[in-house]
Length: 302
Image (cartoon, rainbow, N blue to C red; front, top):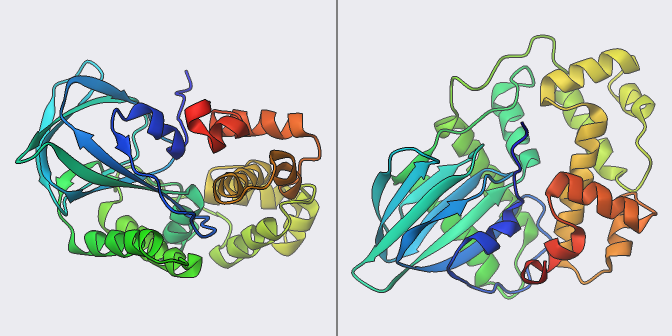
């Protein structure tokens, strides 16, 4: 049975906490940032599986945080400013927490797109390595994680005009560090005869340039200098997805960014990512993201 995973922004509905409104962000394609102020909760909350890897850093205060798999034993961690969590949960789980030394503690959520993690994996490990999974980390300290997260937060929150290029560079550095340090060594399978890394980058760049155009397997295969059959087979070995599935994922990543960072109409956004029919765009978006575009843009009204 398929497990429903929610997009990062839908976590706003799951947290019984104050969500801090963020200023208008620069056009960011690789990360989603959320800030929360938590109070103690005695009754556990159900945390849905999310579609993207998630980093959580404690910004202020301290707490005793407990987590458990559904039906499992509680595991607790004592956390304070600078501690972090890393999860890419494939199943929902339960959490509860007790603040200490004060009424609240503040945390930052940072989600990565799959495309960013894929680029880090291919840069470090080559295209022969398939999709990876991260180790679960609860309440640990890592000076480099802390520094990079803090720089991203300062750029997005404190700068009057945040630089998307600067945040992109920080996010890339963070993804590289996470893949190097927290990759689950038992989860990544080596793929023989996968598409070579330089050809993979060339093809994905071409896809990103042509999101508004119809998908063309022939053009992509030509860019990789392979027959359509061999290109499709090697691309899927490198990414875990068929070329058309990966193309749709890129379209949805772009649509999500535009929905959050611009006031453009949903119809215009759908056309920019290749859907002339609003109903078709909404149908594809809901299938891949879990909610329709209107609810994604305004989750409190979803």
